[in-house]
Length: 150
Length: 150
Image (cartoon, rainbow over all chains, first blue to last red; front, side, top):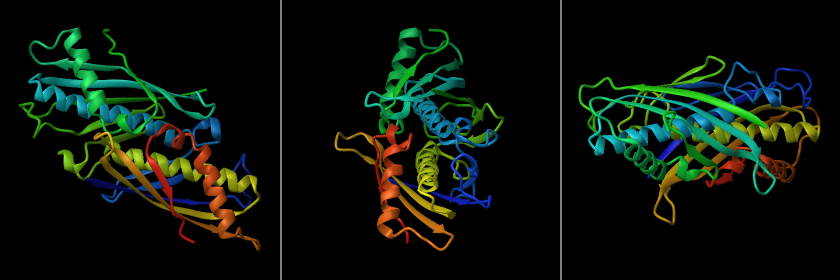
């Protein structure tokens, strides 16, 4: 259907290559020229100033859920004013004992113009967005949606 | 074991909230202060200059695989000089008819220094080991194919 590309570069910048100390910093380029400075998570000897894959994973889910929610809301003729989400992902052992992004909790806060949906309608919009979200469909992570007002 | 947080913010900047025309651009903030300006993919009315959730998804798989590979290589005492990857993600319908990031192809190119270089077989084995223990690879339903460039 459609294709996405990223290009990544890493270069050793220490003389040795020890597990504890080798530089994790790398660059990720996208075809449109956008650039991300990547590293591993601080727990794994990464640079806390840069983006680690776990953060990008949470960001991808949160962003995709929001974009799908907005589309679902627009189709349902709800006029959304703003949307915020404080998402958190948990790196844990999954049921097979492997480390994975086992759970992600989304906490979307949506403001509507005029009269917005009630709690039940809002939950349904989120459920529909979750089912239609391409990234949510691509992960085995448990994604929970907990609107702050719920 | 580790928590990873992101905050996203979107605000309508079009008068109407029409599915075809509402702004997809939004901001993703991380705890370290890094900001990503994101949008939906161009096929879904996004801004082609910004990063989409699909881009982030491909990047997180590529980045996590690389860092796991580097850790494996370091443990095996191979001295890696540079690592590059051209990653490609395919958004497609899965057999159940859902659109998802069905396949990702990684094309890592690893340059070693020192007098002793791993054989192709040894490199493939290290990629396999990295694939099996990558936290992000363990979190996705996507089929990940690793096609090293030797």
